[in-house]
Length: 160
Image (cartoon, rainbow, N blue to C red; front, top):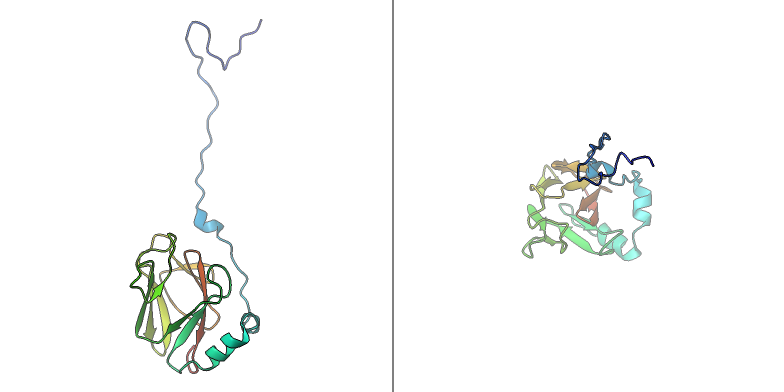
C-alpha cells in the first residue's frame, strides 16, 4: 500500500506540505459600480412634475439635492446657507441616518457663486459621479454619494 505524502504518518511525524498559498489583496474601492454619465435631459426626465416646479422656483443663490434613486427616493435637501454639514450626527444640516455615513462626513460650502463639497475625513469617503473626492465644485446633474445615499445636485438660476 502506498503512503499518502500529505497525511501524517501513524508515528505522529508530519511530512511538510510543499505547496504554497497564494495571497492577494483586493481593494474594494476599485470595485464600485461606475455609472454612465447621464445627460441633463435624462436627469430632468427622472424628476416628478412637483420636483421640477420646486427646482424652477429655487432662488438664485441656492441649490438643492434630490434623491432620484435608492434609499429615501424623492427626499430633497435645500442648500441655502454658507455652510451645510452632512453626516450621521442629528445636528447635521443634512442628516443621513445610516452606519455607512460618518457623524461628520462632509460639508457643502458656498464659494464663488456655486457650491463645493468637501469630505471631512470620513471612513467611507465622499464620491461625485462615482469618483472619490476630497473637495469638488458641484455642477448641475452631479451625483454625490455619501454612504448608501445618492444625492443629485441642482442649482438655482445663475449657479453652475
